[in-house]
Image 1 (cartoon, rainbow, N blue to C red):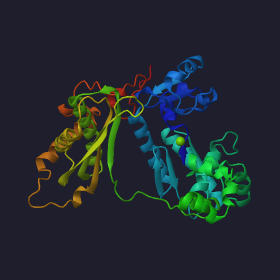
Image 2: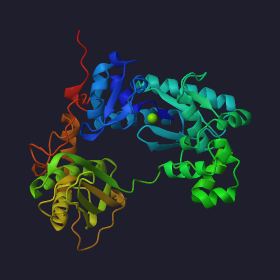
Image 3: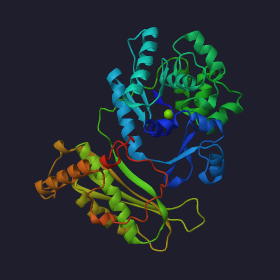
Image 4: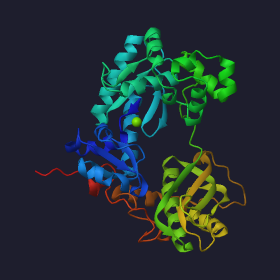
Length: 416
Ligand SMILES: [Mg+2]
């Protein structure tokens, strides 16, 4: 199940006037196009096109341009996945806008009807259009989804490759570079051996493909033949790490500004940690210069242990500043900074030892109130002064839509 032009669709939910109009969403710092509606594709905007290069094209065709609004996309994604899990007990959330579900036990016809129902229900619940691809393996389901997205499919946005003879026919014109799991390098290798289609790949010799692409290539060959090798990875176990990082809006040189940004990322990551009732036992801080610039390059990270674990923002900030000082070097032009919380365990299972300093009841109450205020008044209403007040290093996003679903003050208002 894959959302159609997901970021653009999220914007359109709250801007119905933009239906059937060209829409694009730009990456961090308004760099390049990372999502395009079909209408935007049609006027010739390619994936990843730098904004400064397509600015005129956008004006010419009245393309609506948005900065990325991650708060909105994240929240809409959560809604889509929740709606989907109502109709699919086993679900693997694969990315922000894609999930695999298992329809084991359904007949071919029933599975197809169910897919239509999923599509209708998600649209009704969230306003987001999705495409559904059905197949006996993940690789074939992805291929079916690819075909479902093509225009003129008989059942708009639902396509099944369950039927063997239809599958054989479709795979004959399915390009190898469109197969899930076949990257650019692998597809070049295959093409150099005259394997251009999914059909040619599935009929190749196993040992040859394994020699050419490794065990992953062999798995894809099996999957294309309808033999499932890749299981559904339902996320029962807790998350293993939480990362927060972003590029700066402008070059950053000073320790002071790096500290602000690190404190900001701790704020974001620690909030996620507490939402999932986890504690972190280690912390990584990283900073680096821009690899795309012709300036002296520097990349470094520092790792710190957090005794028996914590989820308190204040404690994490203290440790992160100590780590940052270990790796900071003046004169470099920094482009990005971030933090990673690792070694995560559920708070209820945390093991204390006699000499550790773990979160005191006071810390816990403090963070509870802290989260409550941000929940009620909107994200960032209360924060640690360490993360700065002006945050001039933040990336620019001049065309960002309101946080319709996560901030009371930015609710959609409809003129009477
Ligand atoms: Mg998508």
